[in-house]
Amino acid sequence: MDSLDNSVDARTVEYEPVGVKNLLVSMKDSSELIVDLAYSALLHNSEDLAAEVLELEREMDLLQLQARMNMLMAVRKPDDARQLAPVLGIIGATEKISDAAGDIAQLVLGEEALPGAIQTSLPEAIEVLERAVVVEGSKYSGRTLGEIHLETETGVRVIGLRSDDDWDLNPDRETQLDVDDVVLLRGKESNISGVYQSVTGEPYERPEGETEELTDLERAVDTIVLMKDVSELAVDLAYASVLFDDEELAREVRSLEVEVDSLKARLEAWTLQAAADVADPVSLRGLLGLAGSSEMISDAALEITEGILRDIDTHPVIAESVRESDVGVRRVELADESGYAGQTVSEILSDHAGVSVIAIHRKDGDWVFYPDSEETVHAHDVILVRGTWDATEKLVENAI
Image (cartoon, rainbow, N blue to C red; front, side):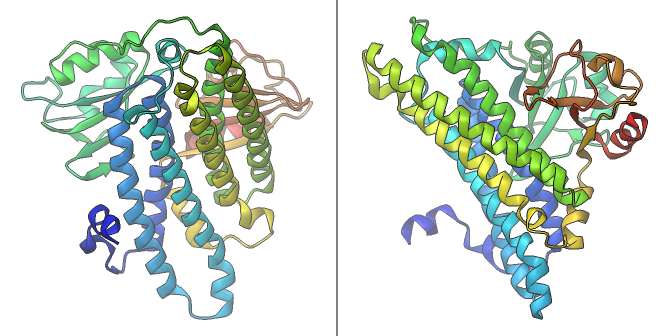
């Protein structure tokens, strides 16, 4: 009980009549951000990002307790229990996601970090996510994102902001940056460096790792990046399937869960093979822990879809909560006559500003995660897109 008392503020777990919809909105947004944060902390070997993961994990713990209390107060009759059961499933799944993300962050902060050679090569594999604290005198201090035109002018976007203990998980044009705010920046490293210096007043320094040769682990790098991509996509699709009561999307989540299981087995096998060539095999335990955490995230995403797959009617509060989020994910299956068949990703998106293609599920079952602009789609491929609800809706309509 002592550990519980030390980790949870008693004031925050008292019942408050907060709308379940609002709580689910916060939990959805937090789930999507914490997975991105956790892997970015790991891939960039950033203790600052790892610390933000743990802060967000604590916030999610409180949201989950509040949601459960309000759910218990909402049940009046058996029909309520049946419809609200999937909501409880979502709450439980978000808890698993945050716990798994916390475990990944601990790989950066604890004693079971990834081998240095992997940490050195990983930052080149993915887009940078960086934590920056607004300092006095920053040209961004006291200004809104709309006034700054940050993404338009620099290609860098603010994906989250923390002011003291308050999180803004959907910053928009009206969001103001103030001194001591923690901003989470996403973009190419070449673009991040200038923005980071403008925010913090300090030059951006890329994390450096050891450079010892670990050739037997080189293939693990691509596997870890794939696990990140699949885990993030599975969470996104799970919430989208709930919003649209879409069994096809739920089945995509199931196929991604199978994909993660395969990646987990592959990473474990390569880690065990590499142990024979490493001076300290214990140093590879972190890889095994990462494999388990990634599997937990994909399993939790599948749990979110359980109500859909079991043909339980979606409670309106679930759909409303997902819709409240500014960004959504849509699934588009290309028919033979679709005008998009045979086009590249850049051609498809040319008339749809604010939309990105996050995955292509080929008709032969293969996946292409976060395809580049020259990737071509074909009839009967399924493309998964992310963007504002209005923008993605137009793309879906034009795909027919």
